[in-house]
Length: 315
Image (cartoon, rainbow, N blue to C red; front, side, top):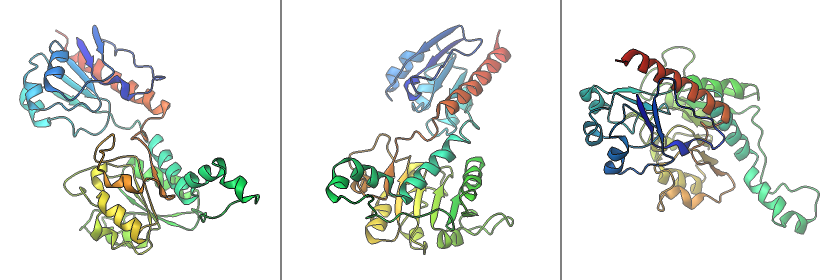
């Protein structure tokens, strides 16, 4: 079967991405623009499309009668018209379970960096500020320990639970939020509003759904009594950027760290850009998922899925 990989450059150059067993014709593109005509041209003879973030809508899927499988190199499937796949008899696979270490460790990196003002102190240590001051240490931005802080986790799946495990090693208390508007299902969950009120740090790990879109907004931030640091490694749409800016400017929150945004890369008018130089703000370019080990594990899972599919559909 022929497989076309539309956006291989979403992986590191160091990652090894061989054709899955059973693929007889393997065509790889580093980038493919979200242009329907271009996508159709590149995939005309494809049995399998492999992609991370290229948008495949109904028009594209219906224009590819040979297509049998869309294999995502990610967990989220928002960029694929799932109803069109079902109508056309096209299988849709994602990859799960590969990022259970890399995303939590990235979350911890962000948490520690903001609490210890790492961005600020790197700058003043290297731009001449330290030399001009002359003292052996600088402490103009307070340093905060994680020990004794309460972490609220919104999204208690495998990644959220792993974040909880790691932060307990620092001496933090951990609260797992129940879904908004629902009573806690058991003793391991805490009411959503209580988590917002009691947490010093709030870490987002939930999927983007109708229930979670703009979950963090002016109204929910107003419930945050401890002026927390908010960390978003979920999806950009879970947070309202304007609300974050207003809350930081007014002192309602301590800081904001995010790996995900409404537009990726940033749109020029994204309000979050207005606070990018704040000492308690840290952004990374949607790469929390991508440690080399996680990329290799992802490709192993993907390759096994594609090979199994081919084995089941060979004529």
